[in-house]
Image 1 (cartoon, rainbow, N blue to C red):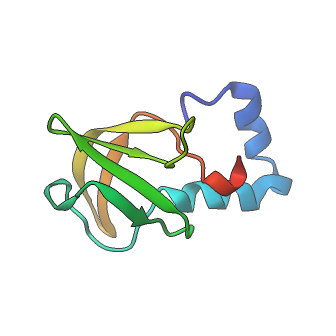
Image 2 (image 1 turned 45 degrees about the vertical axis):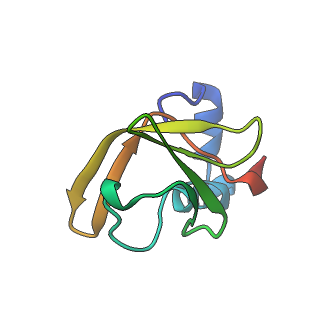
Length: 100
């Protein structure tokens, strides 16, 4: 969320935008414990329902919304263990294509 302009971020956290915020957060989640070495280039279904595109290039892993002018994020810190799964820290906020 650090790259989201402050005004847009405040608007996003208003009660009337709760569904949008939930969709954005769910778009960053997938079912299962998928470690970085298990990721392959191609689509993976998000908990929100729309696919996230995974691309492996030069030993780095990138995720995007799959849109030609969409956001691409690099996994900057993979395989962070959590009680409910594995976290892969990315450097950008992805938006589901349906919200654009």
